[in-house]
Length: 164
Image (cartoon, rainbow, N blue to C red; front, top):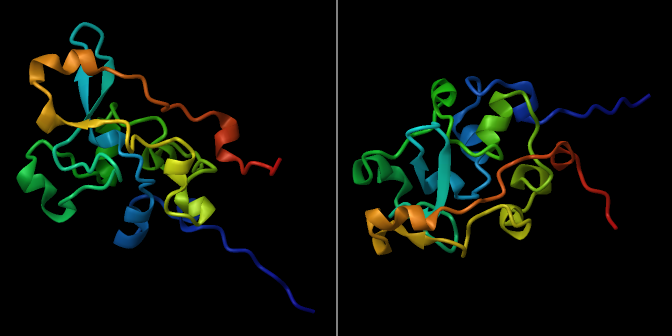
């Protein structure tokens, strides 16, 4: 008798602390939302996302143009680590790191689920082609660039969609 076993994917069997570098990096879906300029309301503490990306964010691909040296070029760039997730309330609700940290699953459109690196973009979950670089915006004008992005993950987003 042959017994077939199905291994659960690493994000379901390992904590964020147990993941190796390659696994950790592959959790990023490439949406680019974490690299948008965010404004904090001093009265409410609420964060407002803009349509303005970091100087290093490629506005068409949502990839950092100098990932290895990003912290030295952009001093306030946050290097994401498991121990910092509690202190980052501005991370999008759709962020894979946040979802796994909160014990939730990846959404159906995540590249690790689909096997396609562009699936975040094709599902409309990224900011690719919808933003401008901070190099072209005066800091005083940032409030006029506040935009509501799809961040929320509905329960059905973490389930595979049936073909129509």
